[in-house]
Image (cartoon, rainbow, N blue to C red; front, side):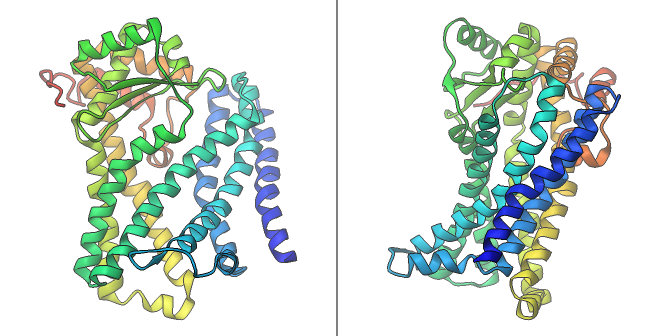
Length: 396
């Protein structure tokens, strides 16, 4: 009991204290605001990967997963051979423990971020943002793992079943993910003059989204846009109010064109195929090369740590590289549809509105899956991104 309490307190307070101290040090330097924010974002990227892994390892050593199962018992309903209550308990506890240090880190760094950017968001809004992101991830992972377990229990655990199951479930997860982000984020329908403005710009680009929604971004000074929609006819545009205020019509049209460029280029499905290739390859390696022997010798850590290493490689190197290329392609699409000058102006406005450093390093850009603004501007100006090609007709 005491070990569990100490573990939970360490997750809740440790990152807060450490990141708060680091953030204060960064805040007190004389560097430009963009550079200081870049340092904070860079350490948050590292913490966002390492902290949940450390939390899950601690969860394993303290055997905390078994305690909720003992309370839930095995009397719950079963679905495809899976005890539903037990599965839900494991998911909730695992993601709850992984989320705790992320909340602690976010609350530890936000006072410095708020001071540097002069934002007005409350701590609760920051907490809600982290919870929303983790909820979307939890549902995606639960659907993937639950679906795989159900498939294995009904069809078998042959290599072809595992790889094929991975392919189907990853594709389903990627198709679901944009909608989950929209569901868990606070949003309201876009109405009035702003709605007319965005509808007009979408029409000029040849797109008719099913609906338009507004995210609150003024209190955090977040200028962002998102097109959720892997299914034709069920595509939605989400924008922050801060973005609407920061951009004129030409810039906003270019930003919308960039987002539509991701849809037209099937970029989300490309990411799904990459995930199938990487994790399908991992499954084949475990089966053929006998990597599973590590689980026999080291238990949970024997499979968890190598999997996290593969996930890190996938997230930073493979997905990061693909995402960088996709961002250049979406910029090229925007330049063709909305104009080169408007796209350049839009990127410059986004950089200023979000206080983004324009020349980030390669590793950081891979981790954030976005090239530095300067690289994107240079690609558009010299036409190396394909911005000089003829316009592409959007498809629904």
